[in-house]
Length: 417
Length: 119
Image (tube, rainbow over all chains, first blue to last red; front, side, top):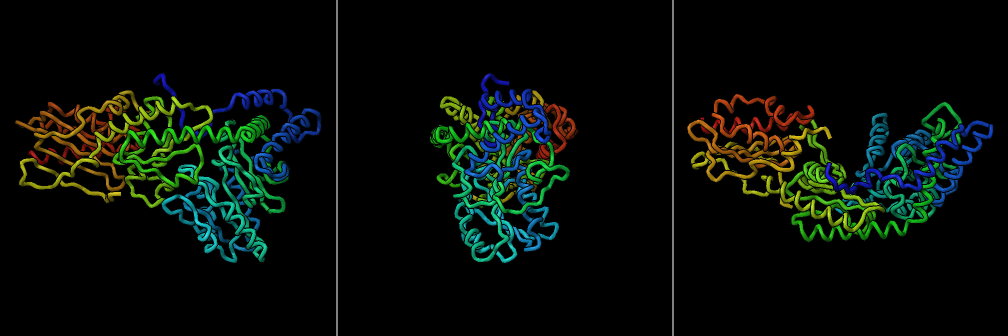
């Protein structure tokens, strides 16, 4: 392990804020009671959970009783989609979603599809953004749910959820009563203002560990009046919608993290955006043949997704890791099967660009000098890998009359973009 | 990270990268499924591999297998090189997860195709 350790993977998870850790540590020993117990120990834990609920609600401009604590983003998305669809199945079995959702949304939609539901997956075009007109065109009388993420986890593009929310409200006002809007705000929370009234969403998913709190806690906002079938059975917790004893220390940590995210939001946005822009500007100056993936204006402030032509993302990722720099790539190669990131592919780019994409995601504790160090390490790694790459060299030609004997070449499709 | 120290060393400092102007046996093999690509250039004289260079595009095991393979084959006779199997390369790189074994297979395939040109 090198001396240098720079973490630029805040979209994967964030380090726990010491203030959050302190609140959680206190809760571990002080609030050990079961919030469902009627005695004082239980009521003390209940009060701690309720305080956290108010903080999470405040982050969203929601009411505390509209917040259901979960184990994280995946559970929240599962509960939102399954719960709403099961509650509304009598009114229709059609879902509208986008091509760039998190796997937890994609997976639930596919699972419902296998059970006879119909799913329309909206394209995002080269800027990585859903078009509201496409949502409008996709709505049918039997549509019960639209699930479009607030901001994408790989490229950071912000989706027009507010406009979709207005559309859904208009449809509901015109008689399409059982039509709901869910948005996965896991990446957006703490990186942009969240206001469920302005967004017009009926369900919204959060995860604590993207907000400088520990893993294992999340929340689902469910607008009052929205019917939801609980997916955990066997207890009365969370207003019958999520059975199971509450993760009190995790919830307390989440509450503290939500408070800090709300109070420090503008400061964090400015900090992350400054770092990200500084980084992108320097990268563009020193490394040729780049593709910036996704819209560069309508996006989260902390995230940069770049494809480096002629090289593959995983090789670059491990080279950077060997230098102490942590980033991520959406592509994976396993069992000889290329799995380029579905999100990058949805932008319409070719395989080579999709395979060469790297996500850099900044956080509140990163510094200018870290960003500059990463540019330097990155430039060296890209140069080293490009020197190795056959893609930016003349192709060899099969010609047995040449003095150099050449083998056959299996050519895979490559475009020049 | 489950990769060996040898693996990391070759990834950080690839050996014999590039092409050989004096090559008389060149092969470029690709995995049409995942897109990995390996170009091997050999200078073979008196049935012995005197020099080897490689270029590679793909996941880290493909880059490393090319590097390690060139170190293994320089100085070997054609017959000795043809005896190399995928498992020999896997052992030399310090092992790979089974889902990455295709990288070693690609390198051995490139070696065999190149050597077939000078036999």
